[in-house]
Image 1 (cartoon, rainbow, N blue to C red):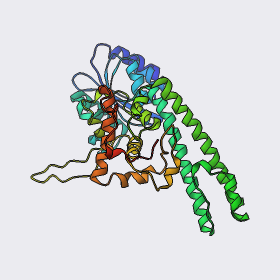
Image 2: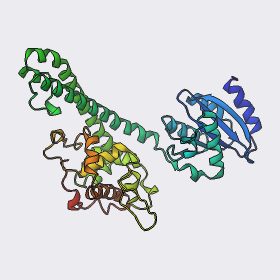
Image 3: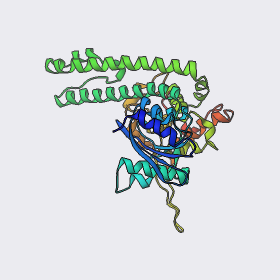
Image 4: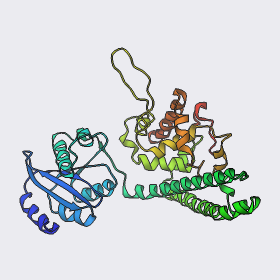
Length: 369
């Protein structure tokens, strides 16, 4: 394979005066790209490394082109890097491009060619999406890292409880806030020896989660002052409000507030065929974590194990919400409540007409402070 610098030098001479369309199929270690000229002919098909240096060497010397790539692990930073080089970048929704996802001929080189041809004909065929900025992504990573620790802690607590019950004993008071090695003192010597390290790990995770809580509060206070106004909605704390703002980032791209419910997957599906139009379940598309937090924000928590995980600063913990999501959104009334939370939150971009007032009683039954 020729060196990337040599290929880039030849490209700069051949492509200088042409209007190009490029399809880029991203891989974890290497990627394929296909270059089409104005007539739709294949000018070049080449493999390159999925690294910032390789992207800059190959596409930095090309004239301004239209580059299409699919959503994936590397698409956020690749799209930002290509945009900084002056190219028109189209990020295709991978699930909506059926010519690639459902193709029987699955090949990276062929996928890159298909992306280029679709981008040349009509970019809307790719169902383009918009990635968030680098700053928003870095702040959102703090929230996602905290959510990972919460899930790990929940799993360890369930493991400790299950092992204790299988031995004929019980752990009293299983709130994550007081799960530590001292809980093992009430157990038999055999269980104490087995569970003390496990309970110590749970206590350590709780300390790390608390540190993330403080960091999230600091981010919201210093960089996103409008979080305070979003928290006027009953049931919405700093965690939900900040996650909501970072996920949507630019609220101006929504024509009306109820479009946000569709964006996070809280819109019921629709099938209008003939005279029948049955009521379908919500699509559950979009950001799953944000949708879970919105469902939690409108769901009652009294009488559940998660009621002991509330935080005055961040609302309830995210752990256990995956199981509650289906339960809370299975009925039409609950879907309406969750969708109303999303719609009321996006009203912040329209003079905060909705968030400046308490919401209706339909979402008032929340256990979040």
